[in-house]
Amino acid sequence: MTKRCTWPGSNELMIKYHDEEWGVPCRDDQKLFEYMVLDTFQAGLSWRIVLNKREGFRRAFDNFDAQKIAGYSEEKIQELINDASIIRNKLKIRATVINAQKFLEIQKEFGSFSDYLWGFVGNKPIINSPEKDSDIGATSPESDALSIDMKKRGFKFCGSTICYAFMQGAGLVNDHVVGCFKK
Image (tube, rainbow, N blue to C red; front, side, top):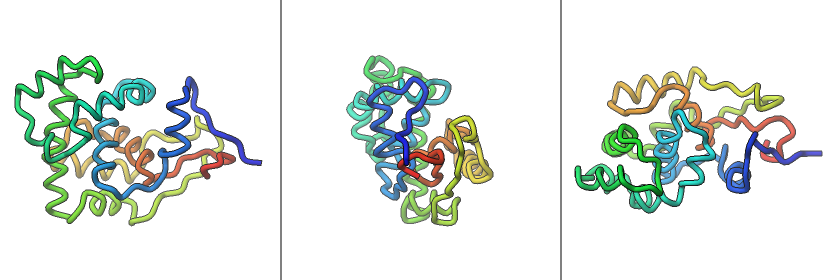
């Protein structure tokens, strides 16, 4: 019998995210950019905080349109810094603008961000089989390689732990525990 997964401290929004998005392979560039932005803001915080502000992020960051975000003016950045519907971290807001610019450069170089990203896992999801949540790692050789390459390209807030969380969310890594109905 399969069981429904729950994360410690999870609420309905987190369960919905787990059940419908987390670990589902994504190759859509706009959705991948959304996940990247959200993981940037999650750094040092709980995923619950980010999910609770997701709609505010969508509105504030033009529905995660990388083209628009890449061209944000200083005035727009200041507006975001004062927007209580998002996490108002100046470094993360500025990093999002830089990351949008770098994201567009990768799209131009590789044809899509998805092609670039999925190349780090051989174009197929890595399927892990953790017995329990505490068996799930925070990094992997693939997230290390992605982090190194992204840093080299000028991305911000892209350490291996953030990259691993991004890879889990975007379905490059399946870390659903054994017995989870998503396994």
